[in-house]
Image (cartoon, rainbow, N blue to C red; front, side, top):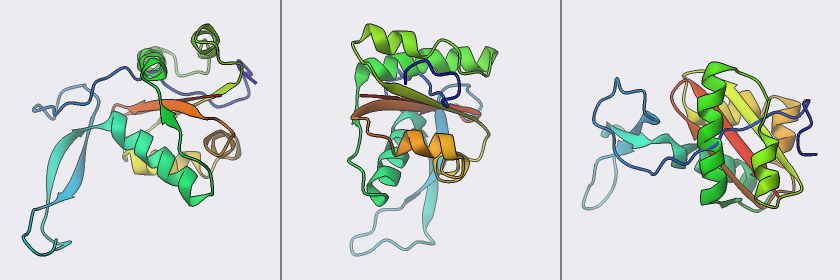
Length: 163
């Protein structure tokens, strides 16, 4: 149920994916390995690191997790991403599940949930360890939601689910 304080909460991402040059920047980025281009095959030992936007990473991780568990991927909604980004700014100041449901109601959603996390081990870890191993967060990720969006800034993560 929207606004249920026992339900894990998510962030409001309205960040447009872009490459960030400054790795010390507080922008939403994460260093991940990407394969070097090869004409025939990619050698898993020839990875190089690049800066990529985390917004796509956490959304992809959640959808991959849902797919592995027999759920339909979420539609990543720009309007929900905007709300998730605002939530990220809020949880940096007050790490709580307060005030996340009202913006979803304003968009016309009657059901939703929020997952938030703190940690710097990456979006894969947030989704597949922190949230997957928490019954409430896991239930949100595998819930009957059709829309959502999340963001991760290297320290905090938030994801909003709506249906």
